[in-house]
Length: 241
Image 1 (cartoon, helix red, strand yellow):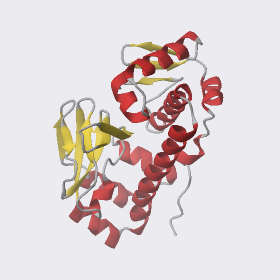
Image 2 (image 1 turned 90 degrees about the horizontal axis):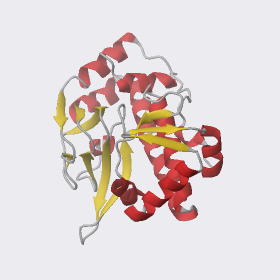
Image 3 (image 1 turned 180 degrees about the vertical axis):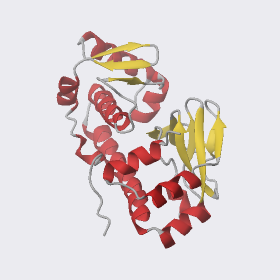
């Protein structure tokens, strides 16, 4: 069975058969969540970390008056809350955008990995560092880019993240994210999101068919977004010894 976490981790170096067995074992217990259902309630203290195996999810916080800020979009192969292994309670929540199959990786199993499998420990730690790098990139776009650039930058980023687990090809990928959700992520109104998407379409940069997005000219979109994918470290090797 396809395991997107294995695909993602092996981009940084081959895993041993024993390490692959461990990953398959700890991700074998799964739960299906429906759209908009909480995967990890905000402020909770889970005994497991949630790995997205299929579908799209968000990480979010709510202000005291109930307004939502989306802080991450998660795709297959992403641990949505690996930080909950050590942070208790967590200060955010995770919810399904689409129907999601989620592996519930028990913290007791993660603890055993840190004791027994140093290389796996490093590659899992690496994934949390990438999460932090994505957050820094988002902060930069929010603070220093106009709305059109923010959306273009996100499309480039999502394309590369999906491509790393075999879910984007020739600039085409699933984008099951509403304009309201994009607005909640990038601090702009739904009306403004719609206007900027129309602008990108008019310029011939993107085409959309239902939930499928096609980037017609990836290099031009990257140039306009000032997008450099280095912060994703998609193929950075991780030393075993």
